[in-house]
Image 1 (tube, rainbow, N blue to C red):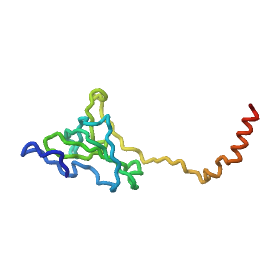
Image 2: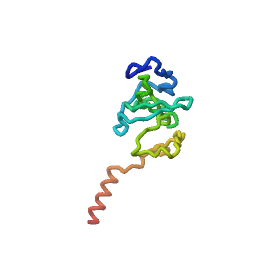
Image 3: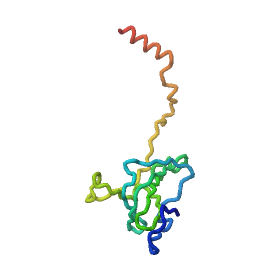
Image 4: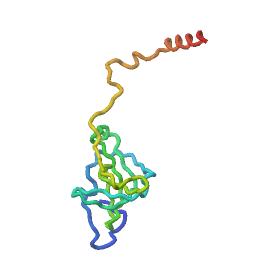
Length: 152
């Protein structure tokens, strides 16, 4: 487990690894992004028991180059959060476990309704007809241009 600072007090909370990160990593390859609109934003994340831990956003790790990341219901990014409960610990939490605190953009009176992405994926290459076989050829383009010139 990682820390961004020493615990502030001797009796500071200590969160277990299974609370700091809900899911195992899907691989070794990540992209790293710091979303400017989330930078240093206060938030809280929900632990498995339903309690929340105050934190602030640091950056985001997003899995790349593995089969799980390409399958929408299993894709998870990790927002890296600096805990603000005196523990000094760092959490890696997915989107649906974080409540952001930005009074200018959120209405805390509305209920949260997180949904996991559906299992449907979309593909452009679904036909048995090779797209290259039905594309314009050089000759087709020449005829097309000649017709335009003739019409002018």
